[in-house]
Image (cartoon, rainbow, N blue to C red; front, top):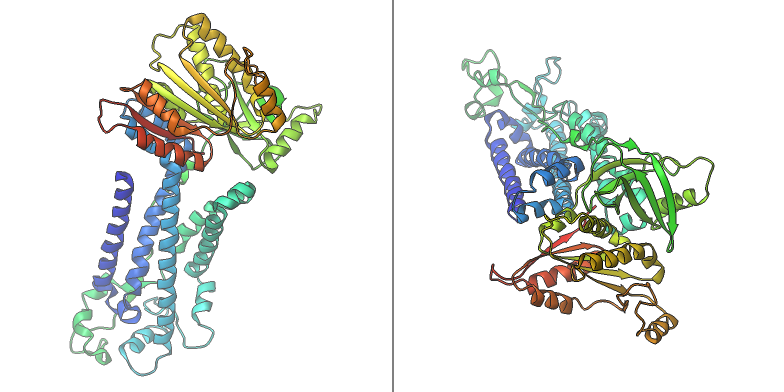
Length: 545
């Protein structure tokens, strides 16, 4: 809240400061005669546009975020958690850019219209006199950007034949496409549309740099201000000129005032990717593809994610996937569920078993909230469907820590909840949970991991079979000792039980799942956290890609 309030305050300060600056600057005195306060509206909104365009890429610079997450590892927990809101801040800045763009466009449309009205006027008014100054000279000292009163020099003509007008149209079209394609339902239904249109940011920034070069908005030259004081000379515009007895009222001369463009964070989008040695691909039930690759050129932490590109499917598309391997392993793996055209084509490509194995490019790894799981005494891990992947990495790492009797493990208890719609989704994760059960028994830490599996979609035959075999030592659905629960968990009961079992602990709640589930868990975190700092506190963390 403090960071967002500071950002909002900076925007308000910049807008008010530059609005008053341009509304009172003496060199724009005659420009304001033609345009009124629309000039201040246009220039102030432009300054805020530049400021937010400088910020818009920072929250999505993955290398920068990973670096900050590493350098902040010794900082307070609340400081590190701010990095988890990067996408929210990115969207907020985007909304601000859209708002200031609308203000800027409306103000300049008014400017063009008033430029045109002043040029068309033939009543000898001050606006008419200013519009006709230096129009026939090649000295570039004119004020009105519409030079003639012919029908050709209309606002529309100036818009599409000048650098500021044409680049403004291109920037606006690119921005509209990026904003509209970012809507939730478009991203979910057609990720490719979102992916490709978002790369219009290159055109947006290129247009932003060029947009103000021509400087259609003009102001009085500093040298001419010494010979022509507008506040004094405006009283008698008909006697302006070199033959005037008043030496301080020569004809006013004007020059372009190029728009300033703040340095943007384009460099932050750069990242390296590597072609990694491929080991094997395994297709699990529920159409889940496991890719196993050899580590090359990077180290990883639990819960991190990578971007994957498969040229056989698409040369341009990169998609994020959480690492399901542990940092202690020599290889790394990801599990990919069919959830769209790209993932389905990728799975089909590996299932076809061509003579040549498809090439895989990897960019990463990058940090997430799950990296902090071992910073808590007690952790609640909640995965929905394929959202279990970051916790596969966590649980595998725990298995290795038990193997090596790691004495530095701060975490004393982990509660793991996995929600799945069908029984096949449990299959690829069963072996890991079974290994953990055996390892905890050997090390005498059977109470370290408490896990619950919830089947949210089933038919009567599955439920009947589970009920009939309920007294068996192992679960009929998963083959594990822990019985599968049918239906959705009662989160209030779960949180109440954890709060009772750990009355003085700091509990980290980690989710990789849908937004609706996030709201429920976040509500429970607030509800069951004690106001007394010495008692139980729940901290909510969610994976964001």
